[in-house]
Length: 194
Length: 194
Image 1 (tube, chains in turn brown, red):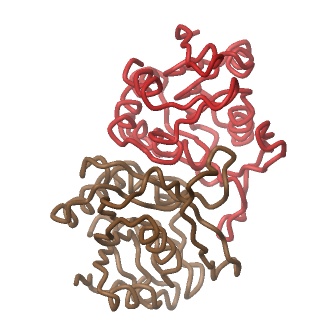
Image 2 (cartoon, rainbow over the protein chains, first blue to last red):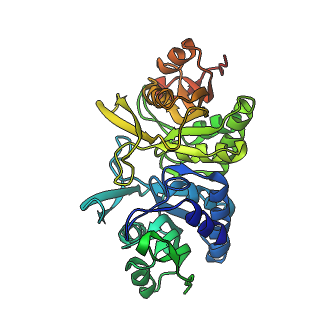
């Protein structure tokens, strides 16, 4: 997705060979027009999959997911990273390991909003080791819903997550795939679709 | 806002006299079409204020804020509830007391995205005691930006926050104002604009 790649080139900050900071339009400040374009693009790539629900993870997954949900005409459910006082019954849970924080974190979705019969599109802002995506897949499996695929805004293609998921036969659509962050520079890989 | 009130009537669950659960369309599952209508409504109510930035709090404030930002043509910044590894310099911070959790929680915004010269619209999902709104106002003040007003999706008008903020002269626009949750029933108050 050219608009996104240009935005990454213009505004992304490479902190080191592993970390790209895109706080100016995705992870802290959000560019609503870019989110709308991202939503259109995801909707276009998954429109034939019979999606009934989008599943994402708070907080950075919410904006692209809501725009995608608008174009696909389906609701969005965001997994919570901690327990909420008003969210205690009928929970679907998974554990997500964060390499940056070096800790396991629980994520949870209410079984009221994800069920057998749903066809799920998982959306997330980043794909690196695939831990968050796998957690969301586990929750989808627990619910009995069918997984249609995974939409990723930015994939770090030099890490293992994308290849692992595609090897499982999962349809993973990444709008920007980064092959390297070496020399404080963003290098893009070609897009891959299975 | 009639559409929102109807949604609250149809899908809201009154847990007790203080707590209304709207997990089916706002706080866990999100209805993108309703968010679009909410965004249109906020944009309409604040279009003459010269807004340059929307400030909200993760996670439930993000969806209505992004839609409002789309209609007003301005970026959204969401305050983080905890420190992020890639968000460490030039922080604007405030402390928000949660009555439900009975604890103080820090919230933080990067000073890179909120500055003197900005005119800020604060948006949040709920207004009860006004603690979150006051925290976001404090961050706005720290940045040197001008506060244009506060847009609230659901105001619990039987709690003090709304009256306190309006008494300070702040323009508070709530799309649904609830006067009571007694007898497990939602009763709406009239809308108030100053």
